[in-house]
Image (tube, rainbow over all chains, first blue to last red; front, side, top):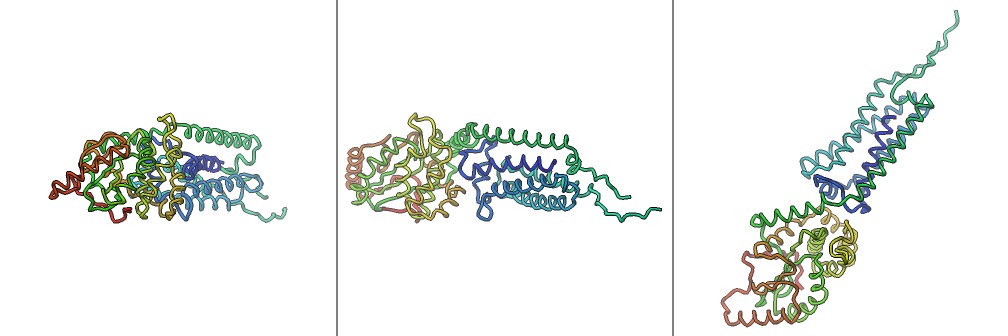
Length: 146
Length: 277
């Protein structure tokens, strides 16, 4: 549930940046002024699509998986926890790369990108905690009555 | 005996409780409402951070430190060996510059530049109150990279109403002129992929800055400002005034043939990519 809530928040952050990148928003509200520099750099596009759009897709999928995982039928399945941990690990790695580019290559910080990096890191930590804390459901053979 | 108690943890705990699920959906709904409201609020906030205040600060910094900018790289047209050099410092978003470019400049090109009477140099001088002018200068520089500066120059000025100031003279038609400039790029036959990469990365911002710095060096404070063999003419000029200035400069150059026609104090390196007409 925590993961679904975090993913939904992240989706709105990514949606805002995607709307800017697609031209639906004229400017980014950014007090420090680095947001547009980051989001108009050549690294703001990955594999032919805006990085923000990839982020939006990631958060939507993560939200969907987490939401499905809360259903009573699946709430006890460890596979969902593993899947969320694996997905968010990729998200953390990608965010780390983007943050490196911001700090050392573009030399500008976009606060929305940092917010997204924090959210995906939180999702990763929660999902890892979920994997660790979730006891495996053991199917026990019926014991013969004595 | 089989363990019938489901494991309790973050994901499953609330899933097993209907009241917990109710709270969960309420939280999600709250996030949707707050998130949509936040985006709406941010869309309506003034662009002070990135465009307005930042443009003012950048202009002030350039004005203060213009000596540090590199040599200007004006866009050129005509015969570089002509006896007269006309230099224009203009702002793409300035309505008067637009009027000159669309009404007077065609005659200047036809009757002065093309016959070889004068060599023409265009310098960016983006003013800070025009929030989209830097983008326009960048678009023009990116067109120059593909050898079509003047075609883009004409499109940008002729289409000021699509991306520049509203008729009130204070507000902008759009906060994001990129789509308009992309349309112009397509109209003049540019490679739009290359243009977009150039535009997004502000590849030629230093060139725009250097051209503006040249204006500060020469005490330009309004647009358009012309120099005809170094003689400053403030404001938009009718064709006849510009022709007279060229004729006077031609006569002066003829009487002093040893003097160089170029008026620019620092040597202006016209890039090979510029497209002389």
